[in-house]
Structure formats: C-alpha cells, structure tokens
Length: 294
Image 1 (cartoon, one colour):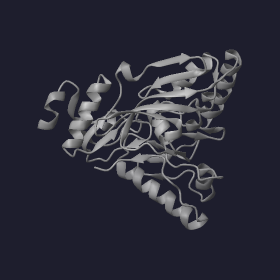
Image 2 (tube, rainbow, N blue to C red):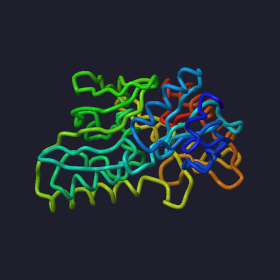
Image 3 (cartoon, rainbow, N blue to C red):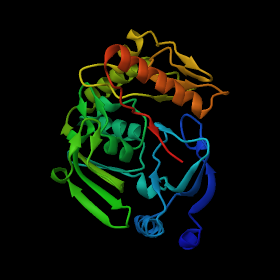
Image 4 (cartoon, rainbow, N blue to C red):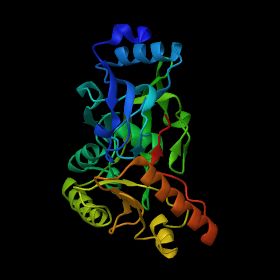
C-alpha cells in the first residue's frame, strides 16, 4: 500500500465488487479508487503502474463478472461530477467518460442532435461504450466520435482525433488508458421528431431485455450476420439454467442471477452454451460479458 499512501482520501481497500456490478456477484477489489480530478487520476495511475499493480476500469458495471476470490491491484471508477458532464455546442456533444450513456442519448435527442438515439436503452458509461464500440443494427457508436480525451495507465493525458482511433466490430484501438471525455459530432434535426423516434426504439428494446428489477447481463456478441439469442434458441438452450444462473425468458442472450447464484454457475452456463453452439452450429460465440480474473 505504500505506493498509494498519498492517495488515501480516494483509495479504499477490499471493496466488494458485488455492490458495484449489475450481476451483484464476486469478491473484493484489493484497491478501489474514485478520483476527483484528471490530475489526481493521472498521478494515481502513474503510481500504480510504477508499482506494477494491475489496473482495471469499472464503468456502470453492467457487463462485468468479478471472480469470487476478488481481484488484485487497482480498480478505478469515474463517479465524480467532473467526469460526468454533458455539454452541447452546435452539432457537437461532449460527455464525460463516467456519464451514463442513457443520459447522453436523451440529452442529444432533446437538444435536436441526431445519431445517438439508436443506443437508447443500452446500459453502461460513455467511456465503456466507446471502448467497446457498442453496435446496433443501425450502426456503431464510433462513427459519431470526433475526438477522445484520455489518460494512459502511465499517467499521460492525451487527446486523440477520430483519425487516430481505429474502430472495429465491437472494439476500438484505445488500450491501457481511461477515457475521460468524448466529443461526438451529430446531425441537427427536429427535437420533437427525435424524441418520438427515441421513445419508439426504447419501447422495442425494453421488450427484449430482462425486467428492470432483475440482476442480469448480456452474455455474447452477435456474430456478424447472425443473432446470438437465435443461435442459443436453435440448440434448445433458451431456458437453460445452472444453479442460480438462468437465461432470461425475454431474451436468452441475457443471464439472470437469482439470490443463490454464484460466479461458477454463470461460468458453467456460458461454457455449456458456447460448447453446444460450436459443436452443433460450428459458430464460435464471443463473450460480451467481461469476465475479470483474480
């Protein structure tokens, strides 16, 4: 802990990750930090890197499964208001990396800025959404990114233009860095029409997701040209359950965890589905759920 002594006001030890994630599973983070400024975050990351501490970034916790034994090193979460601002200027919107994606989507629509409404109802933070380049049938988030403001794990604050970032299918080239803010370039449209379109998309998407009170997470990325839920259903696993982990009745590409569920239940269910789909359909399902190692 001596390397992080000067960060005692923002670093806590043995913080249960089950309280920080949607699945509410997993052990504790050895060190858990919620910095209050970019400069403080940069110094913290530099100190952790110099001490060879593993660094993990936790957004809204919507797609993270932490191990029962907990994780070693430093987990960083951007919860301070300085990382959660949203501003608009002309046809651009700038959002802090810790901002909930839902807030950004609705702000854009109500401001008459089109493009992001396709991502309504998708959980997570802006930083995580850009890092994963979330994708729908209408396109991917990266196509609207103009620039990214970030801090590298060794403590350097950098600004990247769109041309300096490679966006792939549900991925981007930013590595070993935390996204501090993102500038999106959008198109101006009538705010009322945008709001109506957003509401229609939201209604459809909510019907395909677990109930709001359920602890759940999306399991697999959709393979190109295919739908992961349809593949799971085609091998007869749409109602699969192992222990306290069960597939959602609304969408079998979501796992719903019940009170008695443990991490191993979810992992065994994932293995069952991947093995069956690979064996019977010759399709390799890629995880969307991020499984952290200890």
